[in-house]
Image 1 (tube, rainbow, N blue to C red):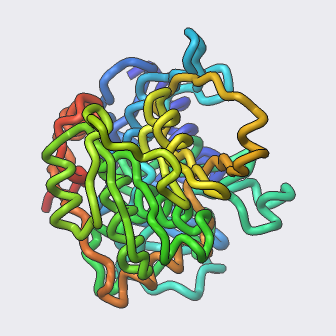
Image 2 (cartoon, rainbow, N blue to C red):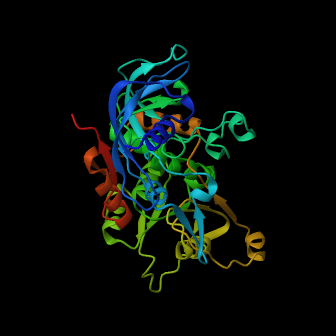
Image 3 (spheres, rainbow, N blue to C red):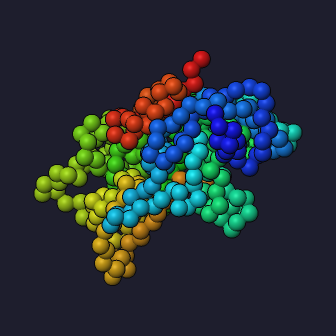
Amino acid sequence: MNQLVRKSLIKRSILDVGDRRGSAALENFILTGFGKPLELRCEGEVEPQGDEVLIEVTRCGVCHTDVSIQKGYYELGGGKRYSMQERGMKPPIILGHEIAGRLVAKGQGADDVQIGKSYAVYPWIGCDECMMCRGGQENFCTSPRFHGLQRAGGHAERIVVPNSRYLVDIEGIDPGLAATYACSGLTSYSAIRKLGPKARTENILLIGAGGLGQSALNIALALGFERVTVADIDPVKRELATKAGATDVIDPGDLGDRSVGGQFVGVIDFVGNAKSATLGIEALCRGGIYVIVGLLGGQIELSLPPIALRPIAIVGSLTGTLTEFRELIDLAKTGRLNETELELVPRRLTNEALDRVREGRIRGRLVLTRET
């Protein structure tokens, strides 16, 4: 391998923790260029120092965000794109932000975690200095150090986490599920919280019953929401939602004479395209809240006066805070949270797993697992 390329890969995989390689060779799946399959390459071992901890990845969820990063952009609608490269994200990148694993080493400052124990990793790590980070909202940081984006993610065999506070004890929880809680679970939980306490006793609508939608349904029911309707064009996913306890299901592509306008105090849109946004905003009752999570892309034309006259709120939601992540893990430990359907995939099939997520050939969530 060209030495300049190898040095670049090593520097990118460990980023700001410095070049502290040992003799062990680790096999990491690396995105070497946008639009390309991941490449399996050998990397040197990294040793944690100070407050850092070293996690051996045992589970890593495969997320639509991974697919978008691999592609190199998000569709914004109107022919516009949100380019990863134009915003400072350049390969090589080690993807994977839904991470659970075993603690194998720690720096001298990390004395509150136990070697050999399993943890989920909070991946949305900020700069620790800006207003958002100081306010406990690292996921909103404009100079982030997110695992799987700016820092090495779960497609590496082992990762250095900058501080032990980002590890959350998952004792008693399936590690595959715990991994997915770091993104799909946390994103759903944070979006649900934005609906406010009134929504617990009123009708809410979840648009999209894929991995995020299923997770949101389970979380809403565990939190005591009484009336949860789910909309999806896929009959299989509507059936899964019914079995999971949805009050009602809707096929948004075939509403017939049924009207959903003004029926819901809260709507969470896990699709995020023009059709889903139009449906979601129309479905709100007066004073309702529309939370957009999905990033499929597109644009809508929206009259401004009705926003004030109805009045409704349109809110964006991006992952969640470390506090919310700990709350979600605590909720899972109560046993009230139904398990999202998982399919474990051997790590060697990482590229195939990404292809399946891209093509929508999954029922619940795909989780990469370490082969023993």
